[in-house]
Structures are given as structure tokens and as C-alpha cells.
Image (spheres, rainbow, N blue to C red):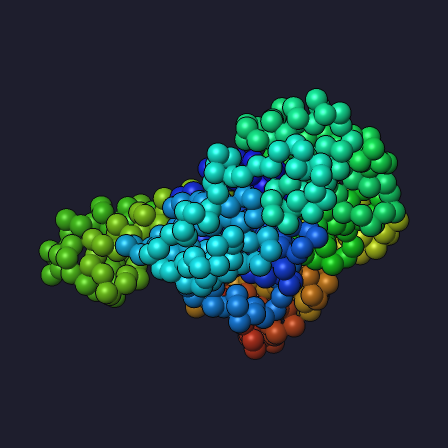
Amino acid sequence: MEALLFRHVMDEIHPMLVGRRLERIYAPRPGWWTFRLQPSDHPRFLLFSHHPSAVALMPASEAPRNPDQPSSQVMRLRKLVLGRRIQELRSDWVHRCLHLGLDHGESRVWLSLDARHGVSSPNARPRGSHPSTTISPGLAPDDASLEMHSTQVIWPSWEEIRSNPDIWQTHPHISPLLRRTLDALSEEQGRALLDNLRSGLPPGAYYLYRAVAQSRKPPIATPWPLPDRVRHNQVEQVCSSALEASRHLAEELFFPRQSAPGTSLPNAQERKRLARLRRNLEADEQRLRGYVRLADHAEMVRHHLYQLPLQQMSPRSKVESLTVTDAREHPIELRLDPRMTILENMQRWFRLAEKGRRGLDHVQHHRESLEKKLLEVEDAAFSNGERDARPTHPPKPNLRLGSRNRKERSLPLHRFLSSDGFVLLRGKNQKANHQLLTKFASPFDFWFHAADGPGAHLILKRDAPNQDVPDRSLEQAAALAGLASHFAAAGQATIICAQVKHVRPVKGTPGMATVDSVFKTLHVPLDPELEHKLRIAS
């Protein structure tokens, strides 16, 4: 990346970083760095590369795959800077170096992203134009070493640039590419270009140059157009912002299969990576929905505060559990944090519920972006002849169920379809429960039943033993089993989930079963509308 492009990237990236907390640091490979930031309206990750021939910096909504074990340098940086908020940015753009001022309480540390020397620890000597400058916790880099404005940068004259081929050694912002450009222009054009660059004002456009197909030459981005003599046969692309040009450079470095024209498209490994991101997103969604459900608990506590004296308690009491009643006047026992008062537990639940609602908005935004990328990957793989390409999401079932399941269709069953496309079958009577378990369920299907009491059997159909089932589908299956059990009037249920191969029917007692190994126990709320929402025609 040209230093003159780096200068404008710094101006545009400032509002995307300031105020956000640094959550995680990764090093996908030597010379590559990934910084995961606090969620906001801007991209979640900051990608940085300091390889001498491939300097790149870009905000991104996704990140390269990380190694299984972080390096000692990554661990040390995590210990020093994680959890701190970015309060200030300073740039030594001449040397393509960005300094992040991180605050935590009253202390401040600095993290340097240097194109020549990489990422330095906050209390180490900054690698810049002044070796004597140090960065220590609470101290800023020496302003003399950070040439933040064009007025502080020494610019050689047009004659000096033309006469000295090695001028870049004393003036790093006068790159060999800029010097070749000035050589290719007339004196009047060259002086005008130099004056425009010296002013520091954003140009009207930025230019990206890619080599012809089959060439390994990396792309180039500049804040000025290259003359024909300099760009040769490279293809020019005009960008409206410095970040857009920087993004193209970084994408071809970090994600070459997705971005580089004429190269092969993502393979099975890329599809697995996207599937993993999707699973992580679903896990985040379930966690946030759990936060949102805490608002109901908080409301129940608030409505029963006046009854606490009857139980010889007060809002300031610290207890492990509290018994309240729901809207149907059924008693419910709520587990509390005994280190906090009843009032503090209620307030904490309200805060978590609000956090969950905010987080779900971000999850939806990331899901739309990820689903778009998944479709692009699958379409690209198919168009390039990858016949083994498979969708990374669970395939939609055949709702006609086929001739193999005609007897199953004749059983008295309730049939549902989960939000992720899994068929759910629930028996209507003891005979249907028994036959569903013994004749029509595969050993690797999931079986659901209410804990400690009577209820219907429910089977979640899977296509293969190793097929993953999202938590959302498991919870929906558990809720449907709870709605046809002794928990139906309680508002929430405790449901056992096991693989069918671990469930044995009790001989002589249709509808009864013994479970040898429980896969998961779920505690789910019961919503009667869920049956109408997920029901499919028989």
C-alpha cells in the first residue's frame, strides 16, 4: 500500500475505530493480524498485514481462519490490551504506521501497527522514524515521530525527485512508483500532481490496477492515475474512497480465492469455514434470545415484590431461589445469584434482556451478509464444476415423505417443520408413540420426551448420523414435546433429548420407554402458537 493512500485511509477509518473496545487478537499466519472489535454499525474485524511486499489494512465483516494455538506474542498482546477501548488514533502515514491509544480506567497504553515491523506491544519502543521514542503505559508516542499532517512532512522538490532514483530512502512517501509516474509526465503535469499530493486534500477518485489473468503480480492502489507507460497492461478500476481501494487490496491478499479474477473459486474448506461461522452465529442468537427471555423473569419478580414480606423477605434479601407465579397462576421457581439482592437480580435481568434485543439486531445484519456469501460460494462452486458442492445449511426435507413412509403417513401423528428445515413427528396416542419409536425412527434420529411425567414422543428426523442440528431446532422440538405433556399448563418444560438408539421401549407397556444415555436436557418456554407456526400438512 502506498504511503499516500495510507494517509487517506487513516482519515476515513478514524470514525470506524474510535470508541470501540478491542475484544480479541489473532495472527492467522506470520505477518497477518486480525483484531476483533466491539460490535457496531461498522465491520467487526480490522485486518492488517505488514509483509514488505503486501501491506494491507481494512475493516472487514469476516476474518481469515485462525490457527489452533495462538503464538506467545499474541498471548502477550492479549494480556496487555484486550478489553480496552480505542480512544485515540495517531498515524505516522509517511512510514505507514498506525498507533491506537487504548484506555482502561485511568491508564492508557498504545498499540502500534507498523508496515515495516508489524504489531508492537504497548510498553515496547515504537518502531518509527525516531528510535529513541518509547511507548509506555499511560504515555503517548512522541509527537515528533508522528508526522500527522502534511505541513509536518518534508517534501522534496520536483527537480530533486527527478534527479535522485533513491529518494525513497530519505523520503519514504516518494515511492518508486510515484517517481516513475512523474518521469512519465510532462514537467507541468508532474508539478501539478506533486502540488495536489502535497496539499493532503482527498482526490476525486482512487485507482486500483490489476495485472492480466494468470499473472502473480499483486494489485496496486494509488490516489493518482497511472500513465499508460507506467501501468502497462494492467486493468484500471476507479474507486470512490481510499477505504474501497484498500479493501480490494486486502481482499486479494487475505481472501484470494474470493476476489482475484481468473482464479479458482472457494473449495470445500471455504464452505466449511462459512458453515462454522453460521453455527457460531446461531449459537450467539440462542444466547441472546436467552437474555431476552430473562425479561419475563424480571417482570414476575417486579410484580411480586410487594409479597416478599409475606415470605419473610425484602427486596434487599439475598437468596438462591424465589418462588413466584406466572400469568396462569402456576408457581415457578426462579434461580437467583445469591451474591446479589433480589432487586439487583431483577435489574440485572432487565439489563441483559435489553442487551439481548440489541444483539439480535446485529445478528440479523451479520446473518444476511453470511447468507449472501454462502449463496455466492455455492453458485461459484457449481459453475466451476464442483459437483460435490453441497449447501452448508441443512437440506430442506421432502415434505411428500415418499413411498417408503406411506405407513408412517397413516399413523396418527402431528407433523411439524422446524425453522431450520427438520421434520418433527409427534405421536397422538400410545400406539402411535410406540410405532414411531420402534418402526419409523432411524437410530440416529433425536427423541424428545417430558422429564418426570407423561407426555407424547417426538422424533426429529436427521439425514445422516453426523448431521448437525442447530440449537433453535432442538429447542423447538423440545417445546412441541412439552406442549403435549404434563408441563402443558406450566408455561415452561424440562425435556429429555436422546438419540433413538439409546431409547428402549418397555415391553408390554406401549408408550413407555427407558433411556440409556441422555444427549441433552432442555429447559424451554412453552408457546401454544408454536404448533400453528410449524405445523405441516399430513
